[in-house]
Image (cartoon, rainbow, N blue to C red; front, side, top):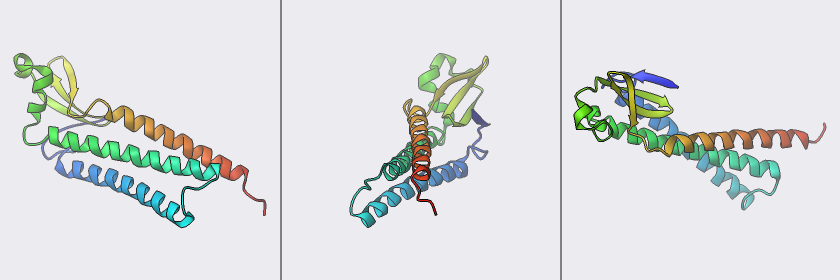
Length: 158
């Protein structure tokens, strides 16, 4: 778990969120552009197992980056001008006075309200974002390893 104490201008501030969003959105866009240009050169999707596995890896990596970017956007919205307000729906009005801060986590992506007993509930990011990023990244890695292994196995000897 990669976590950071969050303050308005700290490691989870607007500049860090913007940087994470830009990186994730760029990775997703590069993946889509690669697939489109690759398919355009060949007149459609490739026919080989290694090429299809490579394209699956690129598509899943782009999907993981896009999901992460969506989570960063939601986190930026939750930590906007009043990050403690994001805790209100989950903690409740009666316990809201006991919230002493919030902690930001980059992976798994989320915002955690800090209560006297330690970490409280996670808020700010939809529940499907972290599992989707994890599954898509794992499928991308597996497809990339399979594509590389298949390519090396069938590589002509010189």
